[in-house]
Structure formats: structure tokens, C-alpha cells
Image (cartoon, rainbow, N blue to C red; front, top):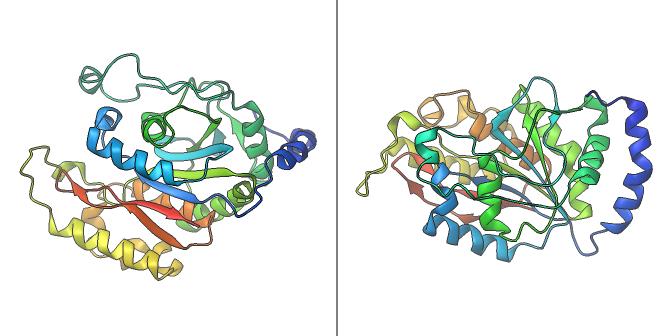
Length: 282
């Protein structure tokens, strides 16, 4: 269903009331980037504890807007509308390793979804009526960060944008932070599945450390030009992201939604090639 300008204006009246209720007195909600790891994240005691610690240190959000490269669409689409539901959106051999009853029953997100549509109206967003719930790279991190599923969650499909446009998308979402909404990108600073090793005695690949260190340094220096041109400026970019780089590029949405001041609540490398780095952006 396409959202027209007229519909967006109709939503605006409700949005004004929403903004009044969601006034964030002290400072905006941080934006964030979470390294989502594998589908085993749902039951990983180490990663889970790290994420719970980070989540407990965050202000309680009034809502959460997520974006992940695991859910993509042409054009700008807003995903599942209604009460939150976990999708087991990964191969059957992985499903067999997890309990079948895991869920993330967050509250009805209809009002927040329309508020997001209002902010994105110039980009002509539409609602993805075929979407039945949240991708695992959304609900699994949230299951640890906010285990009681206390607030509505809206998932935006990752569009086929250039780097600068992802940053601009984050800019459009940024005002939501002043209403207490957490803008959360779910990806991975490095993402080379072909070189991944699941054995306990995995040796860290040098290209992973070099890329991960570059990302930390560049974020600390707030070098936006370098981050937008990461394919050319980052060391070992083609090894760190041999695919289209979507797992890194979603970071630019969180960066655009923030002032760019980064801290790193979780760091480290797992399975030889996967950065665990999570980023909090004020």
C-alpha cells in the first residue's frame, strides 16, 4: 500500500499528539549499531550477557526503529505493522538447533509505524503488507537488549541506496530520537562467511582486525567522508565485505540519525572473521 502525501498529512495530527507524549526531557535517545552475529545469538550465553549489559545501561526507549540487510526491498518499505512477532528467517538446519517457541511479542506498533511514515513521507514509503513479523537479526538482539519486549518496534526494509543516501535516511529519522525512539541498525562491521570458522580454537584473521580497527579509529575521529567512501579507504574492504557490504552500510543510517559521537559497548572478534563490535551514537 503506497502512502500518499495526503495520508501523511492525515497522520500528522496523530503524530503531534504522539510527539507531546514522547517528549524526551533531558537529551535525545542514542542511536545504535549492533553486530548481530549468527542465528545462535538467541541462545548464546556470552553474547546475550554482553547485550543485556549494554541494554541495561541505555535509557528505556519509547519505541524502536530498526534496519537490517537481511530484510530488503526496492523502494522504501515499512515492515510488519501490528503486535511484534519473531520470524525464523534462516535455514532449517539452524532452526533445528533452536527452541521453536522463541518470540518477541512487542506491543502493537501501528502508531509508531505511521509516525515513521510521516517523517519519511518525501521518500514515498509504503507498507509491506506481506510482512508477518521481524527478521531474526532484529528480534534476536532486541531479545537480549530489552528482554521484556516493552515498547513497539518498527522494521524498515533496507532499500537499494548509495552510501550517502543511507546517511540521509538516518537524518530523516533523527528527530524520532527526541521522542525517545531508539534508531538501531543491525549488521556486522566485518562479514566474510566464507572464511568463518566455528571451531573453539579459531585463529583471528589479520584482515578482520585491520578493518575493525580502522572502523573504530574513523568513528572516533568522526571522519564522515572516509566512512561514506569506506570501500576505497578502509584496509581489506573486499575481504571484510566480499558481498555488497550491506552489513556495514546500515551503520550509515545510525550515523546519520546521530551527532556522530561513538562509544563501543561491545568489541571483539568471533569465529575468526566476525566483528562483535556494537556502537552507541549520541
